[in-house]
Image 1 (cartoon, rainbow, N blue to C red):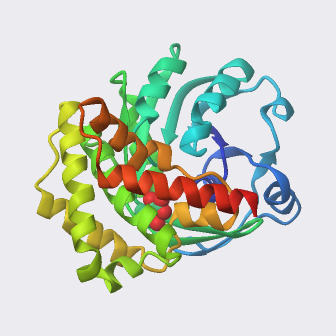
Image 2 (image 1 turned 180 degrees about the horizontal axis):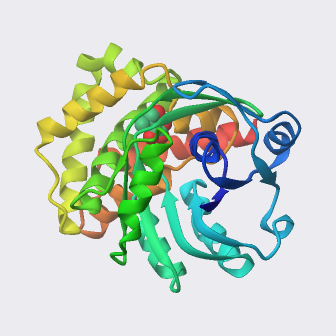
Amino acid sequence: MKILVYGMGAIGSVFAARLSTVHEVVGICRGEHYKVIKDRGLKLSGETQGTFIIKVAESLDDVGEEYFDLVLVTTKSYDLRKSLKKIKESISFSHILAIQNGLNTAEILTEEIRNADILVGVTYNAATLEAPGIVKHAYKGKTYIASLRGSEFQMRLASVLSDVGLPSEVPQDIFKIIWEKAAVNCVINPLTAILYEKNKIIVELWDELLPIIESIIDEIIEAAKIFGVNLPQKECLIEKVKKVSIYTGENISSMLQDLQKGKRTEIDALNCYVANVLRRKGHNETVNWLLCTIIKELEKKSIKS
Ligand code: PAF
């Protein structure tokens, strides 16, 4: 298969590296990360190991009018719409899979891409971009994918990903999976970013953090219901948060990685999204709103400094 990976951050790099072992992959990345991969290859440690020689370009203008069987979009959630606009005007493709943290990927994909099979993905892989061209694949978790227009390709793609060592499946209800993963991210990401610690801090401070974790989850269950999504019981979601914090304990959450690099975070697609859904229903004073506000303040400070 000919695959374009658009957005080779930590997770995009893991997918590009693994897919490149069997498929023809072109990766889009920028700056030093691009230069190092072009000159020396992409180096992975942890769950994926080795140096991967991948064809990279800094922009789609350097790719030319090529045809791709699959475009995998692993940009940050706030870059998704802009990226899709660029992709659809620059290249031809038959399937597009977007994997982001957050709650608005499916909506943006459906609005922007009308003439191709659109697939949304959720991944429990955890990875850290340690330096340009150097990525640590900290945890190999499952990836869930589903075609929003119900194509057969979803099953084939799940096998393609599983065959390169990225265990994947097509769930019965992708929206439930999206909200479940958002619940995990709405707890781990802002709390690790505020505490400035690796994910394992969540279990280390479990008893102290439990009241806030419970409130975040209660609000997510309420927000999901507004979209007709019935999440599992609160206790199951809390257990899931604990498990992911243990499995990915050595990872630096993507939100903390962003703050450390002085970059914008994905808070808008996570806690702010949940808080805004509840605000529209008159529920203004939420813990998700508080976390949204705090992370935005931290963003301002880290982007400035
Ligand atoms: O955003 C992240 O960092 C990841 O989704 C996760 C699973 C919380 C691991 O760090």
